[in-house]
Amino acid sequence: MYGILNDGVVIAQFVAPMSLYSNRSEFISDTLSLDRKAAALSGQRWELESRLYPLNEDANDLFVDLVTKGHTEITTIIVPQNSGVIARRTAFVTPVGIGSKDSSTVTVSSNVGLIPKGTMIKFNGHTKVYMTTTNREGDGVMGVYPPLRADVNTGFQHGDDVVMRVMYDTSVIAGMQYSDGILMDVGIIKLVEKP
Image 1 (cartoon, helix red, strand yellow):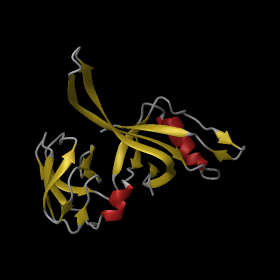
Image 2 (cartoon, helix red, strand yellow):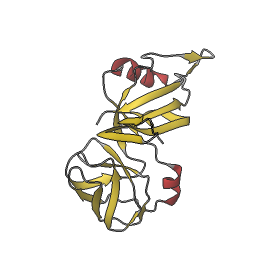
Image 3 (cartoon, one colour):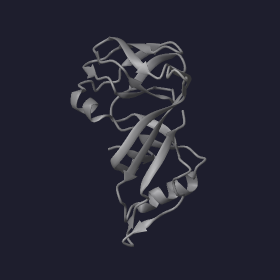
């Protein structure tokens, strides 16, 4: 179940419509001859926009999280995986990844089964979440996006247990909103990665 965590328990589940997208600084311009010039900086973060399952008797945990974390403190979520990834993956063990800072590949060992491209992963002891850009069945080289922010030589999560540090966007209310008087429904929330 994907959603907002508190003490390892999902306190608010994500429901459709939901968007998980990559945000990076890009500079794009067209010349008078309509030649496109484009450049991107190395910074990147994941951003998520989603509705939350309406809550009633257990709304207090989310209310406390929204108020105490506000827009300045870190909260955590279980990162949603792409439905194509869920349908194709056959790997359920924790493999090891080895890679160098700024590399777009990692060497994978101790992998049993398929980790499909598009899988969200996080290396143990690191805070940044990455996406695989190639399929990896068994051991070998696997592509990752964005390029590694630090050297890695550790196991990594790649299933429904990838936890990402996020902050509530400034558009999210730091309180509660009720519909029908009993259901807490904060509408669409936006969360930004805080690696």
